Image 1 (cartoon, rainbow, N blue to C red):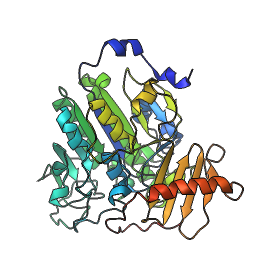
Image 2 (image 1 turned 90 degrees about the vertical axis):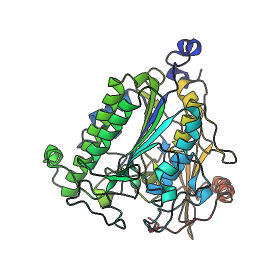
Image 3 (image 1 turned 180 degrees about the vertical axis):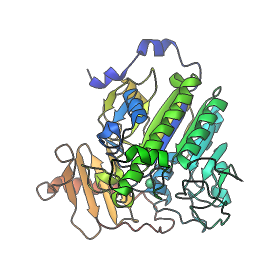
Length: 443
Ligand code: CA
């Protein structure tokens, strides 16, 4: 008997009583959050009671990855369910120059629409700021937030109207500028809670993409006061930003509960990449490196999922999963097919979580940055890392999760085999559609 069968909560009831309505899906994405900076991931100096409770009510993915070690490409993968390098989305788009997620791809909210879903993005887009790349043009019925890669956290007085200043543009509701009312994290949380209340009667997909705790390091005094004992000023600001994020998640989950939607909503929480320790004082320890790197600290995220009554509370799922799986899972729940000629790389996770399927959702996972200057592959517990003009590195993550001991030389046949798999995947990819500003260096 496979132990994953223990995830099943009420198979008999589920078999005879199909859900009265299609489930909602809420994806909560943090930005540049360190994998070690939550209570449930071992953090000691930043309490995160709401995210800890969410984890306790659902499943923790012990080996969960994002499809890229930085912002925009991960989001492109998340909303397509496809390796973003297949369509050239391998770098962050520059603001104001017409770069964005290629229109050849149909995004999750557009695919959900025929299945009766209303979709909203609240927060950070970062998939192109030109009119034809706007969230409303890609399937989101509602949008509240900003189009670039980051934003100032406090309302701008007087409001700035310089549209070329990515971090200073006014927030918009759909395409109309609106005043920001509160600290950004609170602003986005309030909007998400209101969306849930407004749309409670029909199935929705809510993509809540916080910019916290991405730079700039800005936090309200009342949150900074919670962390007076942290002497490092940057870490204190970071802690305050994470604490506000945790409170925001608490407010959004409270809205779900108050509107009677806990049993009708699958909730995912994750970060878009590992923490950049120097930029925001985040921590990914004991994982190696962080944002921008294909070592575990750059791509591993403390992802959780909750679906009350369907996923066993407190469960841990050990097999590797990907942020690409969120779109596949959502489409399957909604009964919505993927786009023709655009096969998904993600896998529907729910059967694995309920025990309907056993084994590992993925035989292997792949990464590529810099148009091929860096590659990585994970297969079972093996991790191959390949930097251009360097010998391949091999790690056994079961024994060495911090990737300290390169064992390639004593496993050359395996290295050759994994490298061939990587090359096969690489041959399917497009060249980057644009060059990014993010210089990814060999760590
Ligand atoms: Ca990010």
